[in-house]
Amino acid sequence: MKKNRTQTKLRFNTQKDERAAKAIRFAVAFVCFFVLLAGVSFLLLLKYYDFDLSKIAKTPEEESSTVQPETVAAEEIRGEYNFLLLCTADADNEVRFAAFLTVDMDNGELSVSPIAADKAIAAPDGTSGTVQQLLDAGGMSLLVNALEYTCSVDITKYIRSTDNGFKNVINAVGGAVFKVEESINVHHDDLTFILDQGEQTMNGDTLLKYLRYYDGNDSKQMDILASVLRQKLTASEFESADRIYTKMINAVESDISVFDFETIKRGVQQLIAAGEPVSIH
Image 1 (cartoon, rainbow, N blue to C red):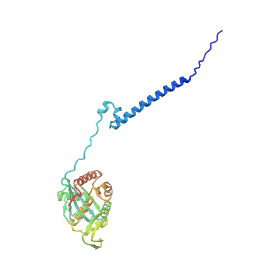
Image 2 (image 1 turned 90 degrees about the vertical axis):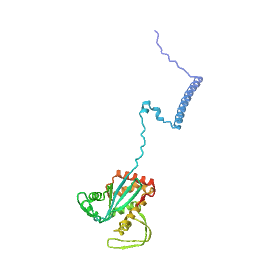
Image 3 (image 1 turned 90 degrees about the horizontal axis):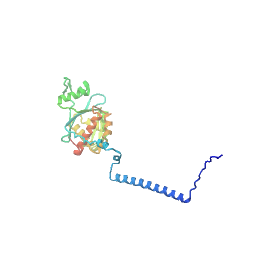
Image 4 (image 1 turned 60 degrees about the vertical axis):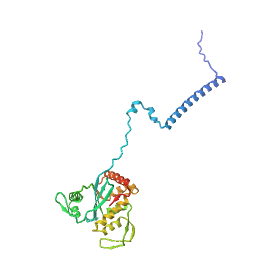
């Protein structure tokens, strides 16, 4: 009876076989390395010549359907705009100053015009009186309507501050410099301050007192306001416009929104670019 035997054949590698296998592995590794090096070099070459590598992965349809958006230049601001500037006492509606700030974008000029405290103005509904009387009767809304109706002017926006708000705004812009023609020494019940002759850097408190010293002299008050604007509407000063707006809008009453401010800022930058300092009278 024959037995089935499974025979296992063992194969012994000789040194010659091992050398051949190593040679094959080395050759394969060398070819792979060469291909990889060539591919990376090719991509770097394309990148060097500003070739968009992302185009390699795109199909022709994808490339043709991709449209790069065009940069649209900001539209130039033209025309004339009138802003109402008003400052009243902290405790009541006693007027410190009232003025129109007119911005002529076509000629690149700003002008400050006084509104006399005793000027008689009337609203379309027949309500009439002085600036303070109209504020007492209906607030800023009534005052704006009356000034537009009486003075035949369109008021673009208004800014109203109290004494404290005015001080905060002036301090936010770093004060203003004035040449005092002669020494001032005032001691009244509601106004006490001293100023030496010569150039003075005034903070908000001193500048408000300086304005109040010329109460009734509208021309001098407007010169002071125009000087503040002239000093602050420069390229270097306007770099911090956003920070100043944030501080200003929290210190005053105004109908200027964030979106309005962006337009105003662009207009001021346009004026500055046209000629510095901005022409103000």
